[in-house]
Amino acid sequence: MFLTTTDDGFLRDGRPHRVVSAAVHYFRIRPELWRDRLERLRAMGVNTVETYVAWNVHERERGRFDFAGAQDVAGFVRLAGGLGLDVIVRPGPYICAEWEAGGLPAWLLADPAVRLRRTDATYLAAVDAWFDALLPQLTPLQAEAGGPVVAMAVENEYGSFGNDTAYLEHLRDGLLRRGATCLLFTADGAEDWFQLGGRLPGVLTTGTFGSRPQEALDCLRRHQPDGPLVCMEYWHAWFDSWGEPHRVREAAEAAQVLDTLLAAGASVNLYMGHGGTNFGWWNGANCYDGRYLPITTSYDYDAPVGEGGELSPKFHAFREVIARHTGPVANPLPPTPARLAPRRIEGPAGRVALFDCLDLLGDAARRLEPEPMEALGQSTGLILYRTRLRGPLATADLRIDGLADRAQVFLDGRELGTLHRNEPLGAVPLTVPADGARLDVLVENQGRVDYGPQLADRKGITGGVRLERQYQFGWEIRPLPLDPLPELPYSQENPTDPPAQSDPADPAGQAASGPAFHRFELDLGEERPADGFLALPGWTKGMVWLNGFALGRYWEIGPQRTLYAPAPLWRPGLNEVTVLELHSPGRGLELRDAPDLGPTDPAPEGF
Image (cartoon, rainbow, N blue to C red; front, top):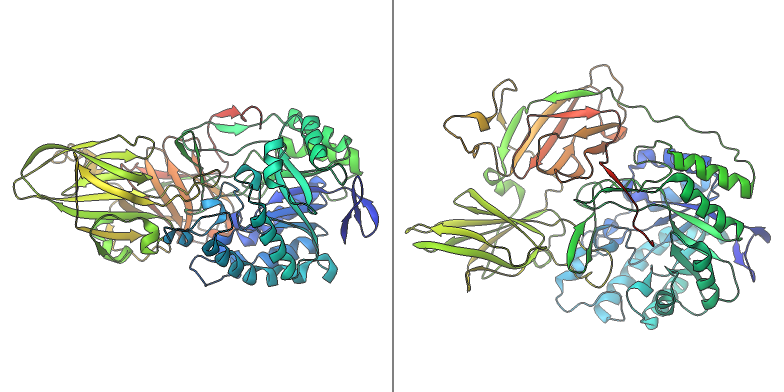
């Protein structure tokens, strides 16, 4: 299965070969479903699959590496090879992928002096340790050893970030020194300035683009006159951000671009073949012109194989194009995965306020002033800053310098308002009584920036908290990673009782509003576990767990309206759904048999 290059193409074991690949990320799929998704992509006609390797998934704490279970990247590669698929691996260390920090571990940012993605000694030492752990997982699976891995990437779209060729040489040499024998390549946008920054002499140059295919291929030829033409990421659609429409691309138009690429003799990797899900807190974010946009939980990507395994019109259009250029597809079409029957989940069966169980959720530290998550060894989740304000103070505006990303402000337990990094001049007015008041600032990490110059995206509060011009000192800081979620002391609630918002003694609804965990029970009875989609109509913003597994975030601003709950997470009989609502809860949940990713809009122009 050796993959080598000629003046205008590839040879596989010495025979002319076209790479027709689909991107699929093992870390966005429950491992019990890896085979299903790979079989669906194989049925589309691809001969190769491509995956990033997310460093932060495998080394969540510095020096502690995890390659088991859902992190078994070698098992994923072997499975693909057993299905007759070649594998392209992109080990980073940076991957982008709309993933938390572009795959870089948050603990890198605990050092204020670290400089990412360049020849910085601190950063390169961490990268070298990562490669020392990762490459032994991959090198035995290379084609030379009879495995399916035919190519590896050197970094990812580096020309979009910088032009430190010495850094890329360090990575290339590190791969070679640790036993990489397969084809190496770089992948950069198909524009001159991207290629000038990201190319590495002696390494295959590939392009990433989604439209104007001939123009993109001409650019690749300018920078590499000989060798295969490769679109390493054909962006046939786009990802979704909270507060924006669901991005889609018309199947026939996307298939026409694919046809043009294949007709030109190019090799192609479809990004994405199957997108999957940003389970838990793992979504990334983008920051364009100062505007921060976190990525949704769903990474469906309008892919040919949908988030729940459904085969979209794009799947059938791509299958027809691939067959036209490579021959009939031998593998049959798989059926749509089974779905749970729709139903409403009444409740909750229990509730507990987040502020009532802080000691179970994280340990407090004392600091003179607010510090970011990374300084306290935290990567994701929430972080609580608490201090005592002096009074009396008739009125003052509270402001936060260096907020990342979204803060709820409470005075003596009562929520006063919300601040966000997109409004750095925002303020919450407050009044402090003569005997003072307790101030709580609950900050959510909505996802670290995954692309561009702002990768050093430290979370929580990096500056300070001010009343007017006066900084407040003397803080208790409590990291709340909520991963895993501990056993909580729920109160028992009667699902038939009216919601607390209707209590005449509590007209403002304070008893029911505010950050709280809500526990629901769903009994499948005799029904066999299958895929489902959870909807939270009337809820505001928060996180959902199914039987202790973090499904992901929801937010009333959309676009997505359901969370994918795959079959392996359900149990026969009784199941527990936990909802952390940060503001105002709804009356119940809904289990649906189809996804709802929200109102659609075409993918952005020029991608």
